[in-house]
Each structure stands twice: as structure tokens, then as C-alpha cells.
Image (tube, rainbow, N blue to C red; front, side):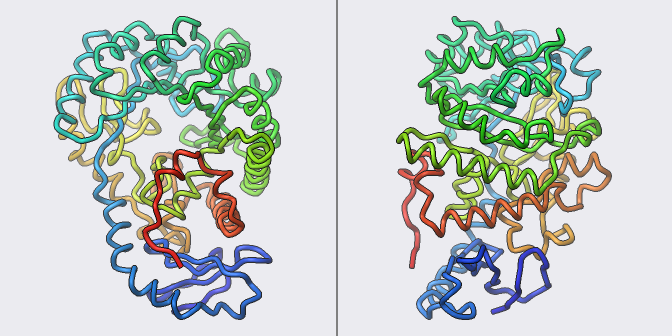
Length: 452
């Protein structure tokens, strides 16, 4: 075994368990390679593990190594993001899509969308699980007619989701989405119009607050609803306020995601890592308190994914925080002109196109040089990440973000934030708070593979 004081000052070591402090009450033993871990009270001596724990570790190590390897390298494609239009009726200051594309870009015809979906259906024919299709990118409801037509035609073969600023959402659209059990993500950055509309700016100079809140009312009680908040220095101090507001609106899940720095303009509004970690943790505690008091859950989705990465690594749903990331591996993006890129963050980087779905196949894109390049970015090749205890919990995202900053093989911009949040996740697990922080259905689907 090896010993070190903190994961934040990593030292090269032989394979084995690493030790660090979680907080003043708890300490952590972890194998970073397969996320075998144990949280121990700090008053039980100088990192002494019970003999039975050591025996359990030795018994499970090969199995866990294999499971982690398969999760990292053998998970199949399961989701396709489709951008039916390049255009947007908003002008958010941090958008990862270049401004020229959002104003002058192309839009799919029905024939093109139908062709793309038919190719996706063919690729997944005979598979046990239906592929997930998410209409995303700029503003998909600008192509509302062909989107809804496609859902009608393919809903028996695919599961659909839509991410929208809701500016074009109407009551009859909501009924259609509910009828076909389409997942719906509403973009909202703050609990008040004044705060939200600073970042969620519409083309007419206003914002999306009024329409987004109207959408939340229309979808109240709908299981497929979630809210995506992009965290910047404009709203970082008000994340708890947003959680309280969304809980009142009956929203079951909110994602408090960091702004991606793929476009340089986003640097100006990036939140400080320490501030972001502090206010995200405060928001998580707010969500937990509301769940305890009311019996009605609201889950902070990106924090829940960190918890899953610890207690059930292969059950996590968001694949940005594993190495290699899910881009060009478990998901890909089809742009409005048919280009297949590993992830929407690569829109604007033509060198990462794996082909065009109107002309070639998904299989060819998956085997293309650009997709292989993204899959080859692993934490073992990134300085500091290669020896960090949390390397397979964080995954050092995002390759597109780091490519835009000049070197895909540098550690994550939000490194300090991730470390702080992961340590807090271990604390929440040690204090037996999982039942308040994960969705009920997630817990119900889990069984203990091993425990001490």
C-alpha cells in the first residue's frame, strides 16, 4: 500500500490503495484505478484498514479492474444528438456555437432529417436498447414541424428528447411532447428575470425567462422534465435561490453545469473554481433540505452523477466525466449540414468531422481518425491527472474545451472545482445522505455487488 496526505498533491506510486482526508471527520482509502473505496472515521487511528476490508479489496480488484476497463473502452454508442438547425433565436454570451453559424447557418429539410434517422435506425437494428435521440444545439424548435413529424414516425424505434430555450414552445407542443413521452430540457439560468436574462439573451434584446417559467408550469408533474442552468460568474452566487424556485415549480431535476470555454468569449464570465464549488455545494444542501422537509425530491443532476461515479461507476449517465469521454464513443452529434462530430462542443472545428450522415454511415464516422483521436485522450496521458486519486471520477473534461485552448492534453480548466465537489460527495456518502441526493428510481435499480 502507499500513503499520501492529499489527492491535491499527487505523487507517483505503485498500484494499491491511496489515503487522504475527506474532512475533519472522515478519511478515504481508494484505489484510483477501479474506484474501490472506503470512508473511515478519522478517530480510528492512522489510516488502519480492518483486515476483512483488505481481504475484500484483494478479492474484488480483478473484477473491478475489468469492469472499469469495459466501461471506459467498450461501452457502445447509445445516443445521437441531432442539431436540426444551426440557427438560434437567442444570443447567449457563452454559447459554444460560433456566432456566424448561429445567424447564417443551415437548417435540415424533412427529407434530410428522415434520412438521418433512417440511418440511425439501421445502425441500431437488432440491439436490445433503443437509441436515444436528443434534438439539441442552437434552438431545435425553429424546426419544430419536422421534429414533431419525426417523433411521430420513429417513436417506436427511438427514445426522444428536446433541449430548448422555450421561446417558441406553445401549449399544444407540450401536449404532443407528453403524449409521446419525449424528454424535455428547459434552459434557465436564474430564479428571477433580471438575473436570468443577463445570460439567456433573446435576439430581440429580452430574454427567455417568461417563456421558460411558463413552460415549467405547463410541464409541472411531468417526469421527463429537467432544467439546465449554465453556471457563470453572473449567476454563481444564486444557485440555491434557483433550486428553491424550481422546487416550488415541481421540477424534479436541475443540472448546474459549468460554462464551457470552447469559445474565447466565455472566459470573461467563467466563475472562479472555489466560488463555484462553494455555491454548488450550498445548492446541493438546499436541495437535500427541501427533499427532507417536503418529501418531494429535487435532484442536482451533475452532483448526482458524481455520487454515481463513486458508488456505481458504470451506472453514471453523463459521460463527460469519464476518460475517455463519451464523445465519439457513447454519443455523437449530427449537425444541420449532416456533419458527424464527436460532440456538439466540436461544432466549429471542421477537422473533427467524421463524415456526413447524408453521404456515409455512422459506423464509418465511429472508425474515423477524428473520433479515434478523441477516444485516445485518456487521463493516463495528462500530467497531474495520471496520478490523481479522482482521475476516473472526474475524467478531466472537456477535450473540445482544451483543444480550443491550445492543448487537448492539459488538465481540465475546472480541476480545483472538481476536486472540491468530489470530496464533498464522499462526505455525503459517508454521512448516509444518498437517499436524499439521488433520484428514487436510481436507488431502486441498484443492488450491492459487494459491501463490508
